[in-house]
Image 1 (cartoon, rainbow, N blue to C red):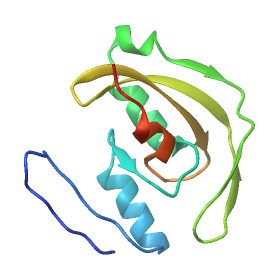
Image 2: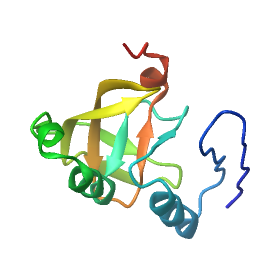
Image 3: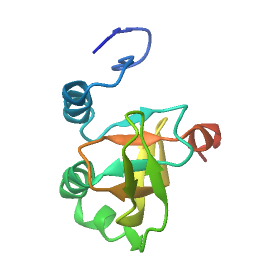
Length: 125
């Protein structure tokens, strides 16, 4: 796993490249309650472990804002693995100091929240 730490008005930034099961598991652990910017991801997705950890960290008020529905997407990952969405969730989050709602699919995996290219293009208001 390649890592580059940058300390420039950013609390913590890590660059991850490559695909190795051990590295993905470590990234999932390192990115608990954080989003990973994934410019190759066409739709925002997270693993069920990341989701449960995130939900457990929310206060009662924020937890009441979570909305879930049936998932329909199928995700193909770098190693060729295909996973069907177990559900689609709308999660309250703080991004760039703003309270926002992020919509994500959830798959049966240890991946962190992978923020898609289209989500990165949003203006967080």
